[in-house]
Amino acid sequence: MSADDLKKQAAARALELVRPGMRLGLGTGSTAKHFVDLLGARVAQGLEVLCVATSEVTQAQAEALAIPMSTLDETPELDLTVDGADELDRELRLIKGGGAALLREKIVATASRRMVVIADDSKLVETLGRYPLPIEVVPFGLEVTRRAVAAAIAASGAAGELTLRTRPDGSTLVTDGGHYILDAHLGRIEKPEALGTALNLIPGVVEHGLFLGIAACAILASSNGLVVLGTIE
Ligand code: 5RP
Image 1 (tube, rainbow, N blue to C red):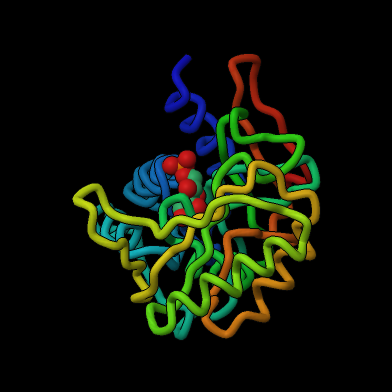
Image 2 (spheres, rainbow, N blue to C red):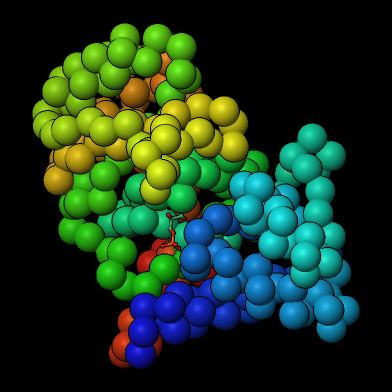
């Protein structure tokens, strides 16, 4: 079974958590895209939900499927957010932002009563950090912020290169919020909480991709079936 088939299976299980009338946060990425596709099919059959997207890409996908959409200003409390992850551990600590949507993803997830992660089981790790940690920064004073981020990483006991994320054409990637992303190639993050707290204190850092204490559950699809971490309902 391909990784994409597994992603779809995890998305299908998450769809079973959706009840009529729910206010949903819609994630970003290839796994979340499956969830939005499946949700769109249910909406076409008459399911009533109201959704908030975590990126312009997901917004466009949901609108194309005629899923009723809202904003967090109109709908500041959500029942459930379903989103992918780049990496997670057994304590449901996540790295997100591979799709550059970490800021809106974190705002939407924390506005939700529950966040459920959907992924194939290759995303589960013993120690976070194999996937580069995305750190969203303001363009102004980039070098000052880069140095402060490097110092915070070192103070947390981690080490590794920081790269400015670019697009395939070599231009600097700009997020939906107009920011840049520094990717921290750390290999291992032994103290995610300490690193997350230190990054939050840097003025030029808008948000980082460590989602700590946010996800309630993860649905992981493997060739042997689904594994659920945390409490599914
Ligand atoms: C986007 C994200 C995605 O959830 C993450 O990159 C996982 O993506 P995929 O489902 O394509 O593996 O954080 O910012």
